[in-house]
Length: 348
Length: 195
Image (tube, rainbow over all chains, first blue to last red):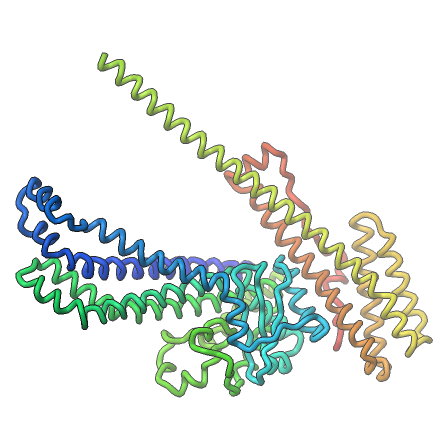
């Protein structure tokens, strides 16, 4: 029975690693851009200081003369500003995210009398997980999908499409809802929100920076850096390369986190139901679904139990690589669940 | 003079360091103690939740008995068994007696639902279907709240047994909680309620 515990532990470690990498790339990009943009502006002063000064006394004098910001100062300000922007954006999605999401997805809140069985299944699993009962939403679409949202278990909500609701048996429904409640229990919504905001800010920073170089910054740089020192040039090249690569890299990591959490929710869901077969057979049904989900955008795709844009992705070249998927391969998820099933059976 | 001031300086430093260490240790003690209290309350709450669900099942039984009576009044024995089991459940005192009564109820209800297969009219009754869903869901809720109780007990017991929280647990006499164990072998095979 220790098998899903081990799986959950492994997923947690992977997530910590991925979050660390995201934060590192984020700070690196902020620092590089800040140093190029602001370090460059005051470069005629500051860099003269760095390249021409021979003695400590000269440095002091040069600083007093030009009042240019120091390397460390620019570094701290750039990273600080980027983190502040990310924090503000996080706050917005933190408090308004769930309601906005439900509106975007055309979800309708239901009560117990609307669908007692669905309600009961969710209530049962809330008891198993020790969570308060989440709000329940129904999306009136024939496509098969489900998702969970909310910043913490007290503000959680789960949504399911009418198509999925109708096609699942009670056991399968239990498997799917256990998966969704595991997202709630593990604070996955918070994590994916963090990843999405970080990715958003990185794209924003890189974009602004490249535009800055293209238009205004370029000319100033030409006039100023004539005869400038090699460190500045290296920094500039580094910043440009980073600005081009970081958004792609962050996106890949964001998707890796998303996939990681899907595996984890599968494992944790089975830890609740102690019945992997329910989720396995639900995933098999989801696999056959050809109906496109209309109330979905790229921004909300990662929240669903299976990739709602599967058909669209397969038409484009994205299917070529798992790297660009919000969700792991269904076959792989089923295989992992089956390994839990066989490992758990003797202990049961 | 120099030596003396050096000594007092060192003593000050040592005192500050010692104070800092004590402060951190005290802080850790508070957090560890609060964490244990929180876990103990979770265990208690989880136990109370089981009772809530058991009570709910007893509340639902008269309704289902009435509904079934309307269609299958001559199945007197099965119906009486359900009522009897419910009575036993309500009057049971002590964990063991309660557990026995619960098994009786689960068994009697299982028979009742099995019997309903033979009455197409009953199976088509919406009220009956709703009650059946409610009762089988309550059975699940009982099972899941027991599972959650055991999960909480496991977390709590591990916490008071591992170092270093075991020190705090020992000082404040935190006792390990008991798992809910299935004593009756027959209960391992939960009756399958067909829909």
